[in-house]
Structure formats: C-alpha cells, structure tokens
Length: 329
Image (cartoon, rainbow, N blue to C red):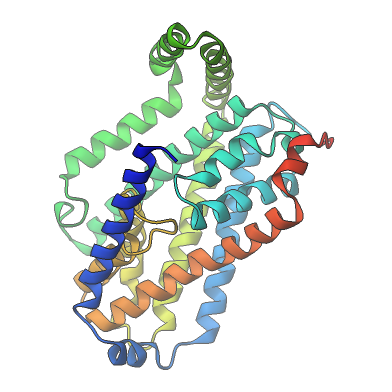
C-alpha cells in the first residue's frame, strides 16, 4: 500500500467517524429502538423486490454495452461479475470492485479490459446524470433550495448534466486528451505506455459505438429504470417505518444520499451516506430518530443483498480461475 493510498484510507475513516458522530450526538439508542418498532416486514420485502428489479436493469444495461464485442453474452454471464464487483466495493477500499470487474472476468466475458473500463466510465456518467435529474425533480416538486443539499447552485448542476450528456453523445471531444495522456506515459515508461494507449484506443472505439444510433437512448432508458427502482427502495423503506411522518421524503434522500458517496469514506460509505440521508429526511419534516432509523434501514437494504450474493459468486468463482478460464459465451 502506497503512502497516497494510506492517506486516502485514513481520510475516509476520519470522515466516516465524523459524520457518524454528527448523527449520534442528536439521538440515543432508545429513540432508535422506538423508531424501529412496528416496522412492516411486508414493505421491507417489497423494497427488496424493487432492489432486485433495479439491479436486473443495471445488469442488462452492462450487457448492452458489452454485446458489440461479444454478441453472444447473455444476462446471466454479466450478472455474476457485476454483483461480485459491487460486493468487493462494499467491503474493500480504493474501489477494488471496479478493478476486479475490469481485469478479473475477461475470460468469462470474452472482452478486453479496455472495453470493460470504457463501460465502467459510461456507467458512472449515466448514473451521475440520473442522480442529478432525480435531485432536480425532487427539489422542484418539494420546493426546496438546491444549495442547501448539493452545496452548489442549480446552474452548476445544469452545467454538470450538460457536460455529461456531451461526453456520452460526443466522446470524440476528449479523445485527444486521452491519447495525449497515454503518449505522456509512454515517454516515461514505454512498455506501460504502449499497453495504455492500446487500451485507450479500445475504450474510445467502445465509447464511439455506444454513442451511435439508438444505443445511448436504450442505455439512458435502462439507467432511468434502474434508478426509479432504487428510488422505490428508498420510498418503500420509509413506508416500512410507522414512525416516519413523510415517507415521500425518500425520493429526496435517494439523490442526496447517493451524491454523498462521492465524499471520501470507508467501503460501504458508512457515515457519509447515512448523515446526508438523515439530513434529507429531516428537511421534509421527519424527526431525527425516525430519520436515523430510516437511514440505517435503507443502507442495509442497499448493502446486504449485493454483498451476500456477489460475495457468494466470488467464492464459487475465484478470480484466478476466471482469469485462466476460456469459457465460451
């Protein structure tokens, strides 16, 4: 582990502790217990069903991105690696799951690392775009000020959203920058630079393909479906708690809590996600204890299923075995 990684991990732990303390100082355990009393198992199960729908959409979106390079890929081929990467991200630092997805499953997927890296890049852009859209819609419906949650003005959010759309629709805009970066690395480390340039070129080809025709429209549609399903998880979790005065606030907690995961934290976003989720619920008239109980419940619904299912997949399909395998898809 490098000094930079150690500092990054330490910063994440400190921030996680800080945000957890901000939550803990406002409530006590007895209040949390009372807030959880009468929790509806039915709504929790419905929330888990919505979670499953959301991840099914994410898997199909990823399959659609990869199919140009391996047309025979089906949904089940992509499900394991995606869930495995999410499980690794939930328990390991430094986005280890993304590295795992990019380099450990190539034999199973039948595509190059450059292609997978390109799809991860597009995936992040699509997710950020959807979160910004949902935040804008929630703020407009609830009549709230964007600067109170995002820390920036609405004009900045619009500018970011437009920038994301430009990258998705016109990837050639940053092609010269990417290639120049690869050439710079080649000057310092020729072998590494050559490999990097090859991966960059493959990534640009994939990005160019995804931006053509109706492909990007379909990717946006699957992204919207995935995030609406996740929004239902937030909403159903609020409905599960009888102590929740305004369950609709879950639709605000979704984008606010998700954007908070951009702040350095521990694997699983302990503290950061919870604090800003609580803040969003409080802003909509829910009391601190109910909001805290809600944050814990929705965090569990989002963390436990992919960690257990993805972890089981990784146990049954060790990455070394996958790297050596030449499974035909």
